[in-house]
Image (tube, rainbow over the protein chains, first blue to last red):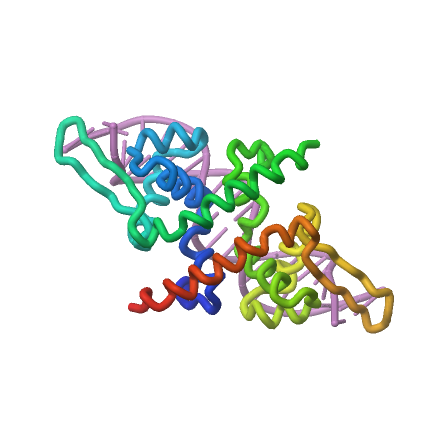
Length: 108
Length: 108
DNA sequence: CAGGATCCGCAAAGATACTG
DNA sequence: CAGTATCTTTGCGGATCCTG
């Protein structure tokens, strides 16, 4: 209900990027500039179109990504980071690096 | 099921810190060194004890925090960041700063 | 190609009460 | 103080099929 009640800054940020795939999507856009719907689908092997659509829409309505529609046939839609989204770049890279460092100590 | 299948580093990290309150808890421990159960409860006004316990236990079993039990009466338990948890410090601070910068542009 | 429409399951979280 | 025990809820994401 009070999603935007967002007491503290950390909670505020989590509410923006806290979806199951949102950070991965943002990371994709951070490293590829522009991605199309089915490109993202391929990067996220287990995601369903419905879920991908929802995550993208939420990111868009939170102002983190841009959705560029080309009125052609077949349809073409390009997703990219907004300026606000780009301000997450350094965090995204650190999250990736942290994962790289600790993913190895984790087997078994 | 395949929580630890964790394809990419970003997803791996998200699986570790992706709980609704986990980053806030980690941030508390990053800025206060040590926190007790009810102290954390006060910082997270809406959390229930059951949920707090679970988030703490998951963070502990993922090796991000330490749980120090003092066998006294009344009981005393202190939570703190492990070395692995401390390696998240810079990310936690950046997340807070990002929230501080963008929480203002967000009203209405 | 980029989704929309439906239906559904389940894990995550909330509410409330109780305890060593 | 630091939890546990139950029960209930919710809402995210999955599965499947359909379409401009």
